[in-house]
Each structure stands twice: as C-alpha cells, then as structure tokens.
Length: 366
Image 1 (cartoon, rainbow, N blue to C red):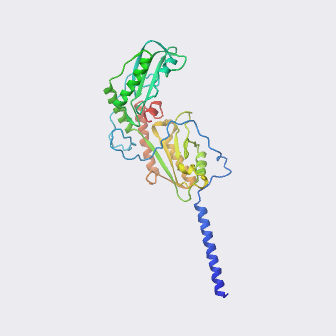
Image 2: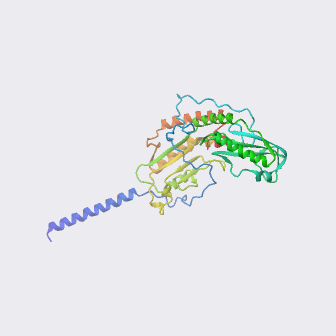
C-alpha cells in the first residue's frame, strides 16, 4: 500500500470522526432540556381541587362570525366609544340569585314545604339551553335564601335563570324552557309562580350581553424556545418553582388562588400529546402559553403584574422569549399599555357591581 493511500485513509478517518463528533454534539444540543435530578421539585404532580374553567385564554380572539352573541377580547383602545351604560336593577340581592344577572320568578306557597319534597321536585336538568337555572327556598328558621336542603322547611321559593354568559344572551326559546321547568317545580310543591314579561327580560339579557362582550378580557403570552427545546419535565420543574401545580388536563398547570375553591390566577399549557407520550423525556416542546382570564380573578391578586413577572422569569431560566399569539415580541411598553387598560377595565367592572373575581362576574363571564 502506497504512502498516498495510507495518508488518504487517515484523512478520511479523521473526517469521518469529525462528522460523527459534530452530529453527536448537535444532537446533544438540540435534545429537549431535562429537569435537574436533585432539584427536589420533580416529584409526581398532584392535581388540585376541580377548577371552574378549562378553556385556555388566548391573546387574540379569532374573528367573529358577525353574530350578535360573538364574544371578543376588548381592543383596549381609549379612542373607541364605550358601550352604553348598563341599567342596574334596584331590587335587592337575594341569596345566590341576583337581579343584576338573573331572571327571578317568585313562587308563593299554600303551605310550608320540606326540603326533601323540594329536592324531589327539582328539575332533572338545571339548564335552559346554555343558561344555568337555579331554585332557592326561603329557610323558615334562618330567613335566608338557599338551595333546598334535607331536613329544612321553606315558606317560599324563587326560580331563576341567568340572563347571559359567554355563550350569549338569554333568548326566547331558553326563557320558555325556563318557564316550563319552573312551572313544573311550582306545581309539584303547590306553589304559584310569577314570571316577569319575557320580552322585557330578553331585552335586558341583550343589554347585559352587550356590556359583557365589550368588557371580557382573556390574555395569553406565548413563551417560545430560542435554542434547545424543552421536555415536559423541564417545563413542569420550572413552573413548580414559581408556584404552579398540575391541572386536570395533561399539559396544563395552574397558579392557585389564595383562597381554596376559587378559579386559578394563571394557567400554563403546552402540547398535550407531549405530556402523554410514552417517553415524555424525549418529547420536544418549543412553546407554551401563559394565560389569564381577567374577569375570573380578583384584582387584589395582582394577576397581570404576576403574569408579567412569571413570563420574564420563565424566559430567563428556560432560554426563551415572550411573544403574542402571532409571534411578535411583547416589549415592556406594550405590556405597560395593556396593564393600564386593564386597570380601566377593573374600574368599569367595579362600577357595575361586577368586580373581577366576584361570584357575579365569575358566573357572567363563564
């Protein structure tokens, strides 16, 4: 074998080794980042109490179809005219039902009715179309309105149906279904219901829906990986460090509210298929969504400032950038403007007795 052949073989071997080494290096660099083994936070995640909502908010809502009930995110443009002021009923608040967002039909009784009898007479389904239906009794001992309970006695009842929610305003068909359910209950307990005028209530529902549509904000930041992708465990570990816990859906985590049973302050979601993979460590995640459902969370929780802080912390620790749903970088001045507009939104909701995070707001914006 000539010296030239030997030299060429050596050079070829070196080139092959260089290629193999380069490919191994790039493969290692591009492999999904894994959680730290000794962090202490990578124990199996425990799901919290059931949540009220599962929909992931997004920064830009899709274009509406033109229907009157299409929900949309506020444009946060102070130059736009505000929706017409919503008339506030003067009737007093009673129990869980509220004249601000409910049609309420009082039911007078011939005799006292036991809670057991009332429960037996309740409608099989507590909805009229897409609107919740509720029946409350006036407790004979406490003089408080409450859902019928065993062993109690009631001197009157009231039936109610919600005027609007995120599916739109109460319509004539839904109102008629409510009347049928309430009348059947009243007949079963020997009561006489008094129903408000349908056309008046449907018109009030449309006004409420118009107000709610113009003041419904669901925000989302997208965190995108700059270089190496992330494994589900890596995402979970970094989110846990900031207070997140597992949600009910694979690939979803939540930042719990300060009070148990309330909706989460923030949501964090990534690809469900990656979370369910046979070997999640090999799943590559390149983006995740951090979300805030504004009307569901009390402003005292500082949800938007915390959302900004968490997004910045995750981007710093995970080598990512914070963008909107279209991939545009969210700069500090843009977030400042959104924060200022959110404060105006909070003030408007407060002025209508629909403060963010209140029971009424959580019902209306659901």
